[in-house]
Length: 135
Image 1: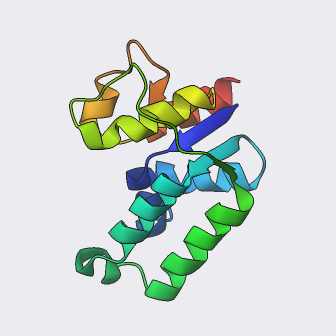
Image 2: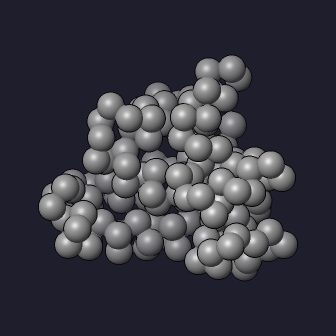
């Protein structure tokens, strides 16, 4: 199975070591699925982790190490133009295009994207973990 993790899921994995997002990262590191990222996704993650709000919770060195781990350990796919699927938040369309072009599921906590779950392979973090267990 291939998965694209929304930056909000990646950030949550750093904030709470016991939550579903951290369990997803552990599963990826254990080889349970193939993680797909893109330069746009990594750039969004990097910007978010540099925000003052998150710097209080994630040290800059930890953030840089995490982004480097993703860049070197995940499949870095090319960014695709927005496809036929559109989110209510146009800033999320690149995630839909990435997941679609890479034949991957999208894992997110974003309600705009989760609203599309009935028509696209989109999961919450907990839903993705449940799906991995059933696979």
